[in-house]
Image (cartoon, rainbow, N blue to C red):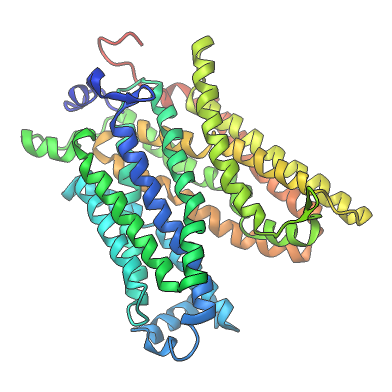
Length: 471
């Protein structure tokens, strides 16, 4: 962040009466609740999407009613090859959709930084998402619905996250804490969406589930608009009001940007284990674990529900722990927390490697308690990776292009999911112990790179001292 920017100082002067939520600006709960309902809508729709396509939409006569589907199918065949069955076609559509969701935040960041400002772009994104959810009710508008959802997430996600960082002054240690609270909102939305949207979609009707997702997004938009006066000033709006030019990039800005670009693929590699939890891990778990728990046979999907629960608990625990730690010692910077998180996450896959090798050697299925330990360790690690890395990118990005940089940050999830798709296919062609050891090696390799970055560029990634501050 550049201290020479003329609009930095005043916007971070947060009045004390606004700190009404766990010692944070009141804008934080506005953003966190908005994100919770956005994730409720997103994951609610995602929970139903593949099931809906396989069981209804891609079957006759529904598939013939989808506008533009012939052209779209040809594009997919060019990317993936001709699908051998309906399930494969649904998978291709799902993969393309989720990939684009993590690419379009760059476009949303550019729109906010150059033309509309963050608040307007977020509101437009929410409206596009709500419209997309409601259009899922009609066969003919399915592709248009997906397009609106992709564009809506792109407009909303990166810009909403960058507003969290803008609530805090440079050097304010609460910013990292705030992103962990922000991720708690994500976890809450992700936990409840399958329970509500999934149940309505499968038990009442598909369109009821998609409609519930749309209602959730409308609620999130109303929360955002109602609390918009608590949000940080928008850099673009301020420049227009003051007729000020876009702040010039300093040499330090350029070096930091190059470093942040370089870290994107490293973050992707560090996340390969976490993202694999929803792909090859479930396939391996289904045939490897003994699913008896407290005398009851648990379904494989129990692991997904437990993952959402432990994700919330470990995020809340991380917030509480670092708050307690900061009262007694100096709190570590983001890079140190990132390294700690990767090491903890790697321990989850070391455990998987051990039990998978033992299962292959003896035929004895590991207890479901092992699976619960794996989920807990992985989520505990990533409670200090996802929100902390997002906080780092939000703080370190030059303020004039912060939305764009956050959009670039989300590319790591697109890369990670691409790697997961490739590596996940190896499960059937190699011993499971070796398969999971590859994940351990990838995570530890990324951790080693983060250590080098910390040692060589650590001071560059620390907050710049602000003139007149006590830092």
